[in-house]
Image (cartoon, rainbow, N blue to C red):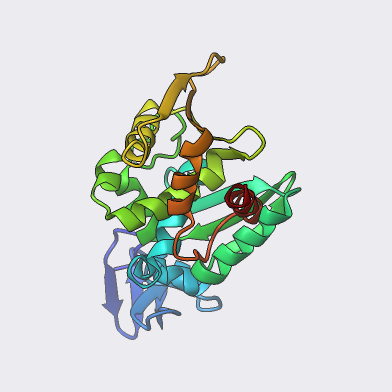
Length: 261
């Protein structure tokens, strides 16, 4: 049966029909399955998944990297949680950073090398995007929504991870919505979701109880997680342990400045 129609395919003599329309039996460009189309002159696919695999072959394997490249995979989830977006009714996912930051351009290029997808400039942004049904479904299942700013709640999924994966995720969060101030010895993370704020602050308090959360006065609800002084370095040490493959170089340099003081 054609995925674009609920009408059954009927054979009459040497021809195939969908209702009163003549269709042709051809093969899916990706998997070779038999399908029926009204036109034989262009690439055809038996499913949206096969279409996406053909369009971005490397992207179709992204979920396997949760086991093969776990540090990079969970870092990516943290970065999507802060500077990312997923489509509402599609399998689209993107991360948007500033095009004026050379570190951002390098980071998204590194992400593309590992996970596939595409990197392009859009106005003042540098954007990494990917189409993957399985990855999009995974993100929705763990708590992502297309309008996640106020509602993001990954607590149940995050709490199920082992300690190493949590720190990989935290590196993505800090690279996305975190800031490191070496002059005033401060680390802060800002979020519009109280659920996300509580999850991150509770985790960081396992390393140091001097982690504070404030509600910022602004037009929209916003919370700030703040760590100061000597309490910052132990957190950054955990974030950058084991020589990670993915990180925002600008913030990694700031971590290096911290260690030299």
